[in-house]
Image 1 (spheres, helix red, strand yellow):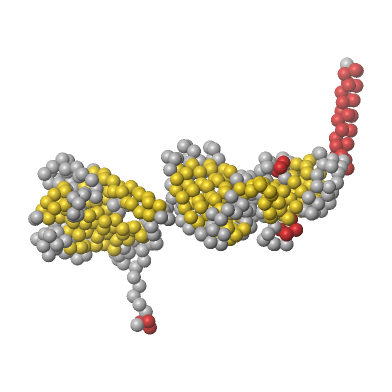
Image 2: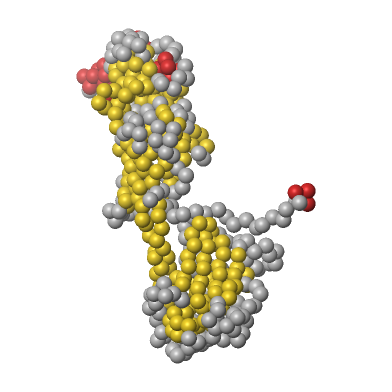
Length: 494
């Protein structure tokens, strides 16, 4: 028992001595160093964003002989953290770099830091940049009891890109003029500290002319099939003037590609500041879109394909049809499928139908019978406002009109707000169509009436007056800018 007690007492003494020696070693041992580290915020379009350090990050600190040692931390993620090492060389620290590949960093006696900006950048959250894509360098200040890197200076600029749909497997941004965008560069800290623009130069043969954004697997930015979720993301690039701007290639999940140009001349990407692409990358459509459903045409072509004519009353829904809208984007032929729903309305028999037929010697027009509850659900186009809807009809025996409304008449909660085409009009003859339209904003102040449209929303034109209805053409106009009511001129300007 005595032996055991002596052993225990000896062990306690050894532990006490060890702790006392460790406390003094932390400050007296030249192989130990600790530095408080913070970084500049990056200026995002939605406000400045602190560059948050994490326990996974590594700071490479160089002494006055340019020997680099990796410093780590056990602090919780934040913007002001303590990094340390037990393997310091004992010389005074001078410069430091922080990046994903810290172990590849170098430093010279002139304060020239060799760092690497990632070319393949994985993003984990919308409205931000990928972890490890921001590169920072700094100069150590203070002394052994209070070394600081405060703050480290970010050397990257940003490009903000946006997708409306979750279809992009990757987004590649390439300098059209061949400038180096990423890869290995040398940073002159003195020039950076003095605010000079030419603070970096590419390392020989190590620069890349592009960066590529992909989603971080199982992150908030990734869909189940590995695409980027709809939203905006930032690519980190080297700050400079890009003589011919960028070519941006979106590779979609079906293997197809969308190629967009972003500024063709002299685009300046400053340090810490973002540039924003003009539109969503998958928004290749013209600013104004005009859809003409020409039911009367010389080629005997129904723009919506063959109509279904056997069904009786369609109380729940109509029939869906696809219209292919062809257009050019940057000289490239493109197309978009637009969905129309056509219903002859409730209470109609199979013989009372919309059809593609010959009436009064005029062929190729769509014929609704009855026409007092038929309707057409119009397509909603992402990023575009429905500005006007026009109907050209050939009814000369009774005046006709339609109304534009938020929902079809089969909607359980009602048709929503609406606005009627005015006035009721009849055609001069069965072969001379006349136009009736709704143009928004309507200028109405009446409660429950439609006064404007929402971008991307689908609306319904419902035929509310009359019996049979012969439609020659339906014209839809969509605009990128929200429609604005005409303002009467000021008296002083007249």
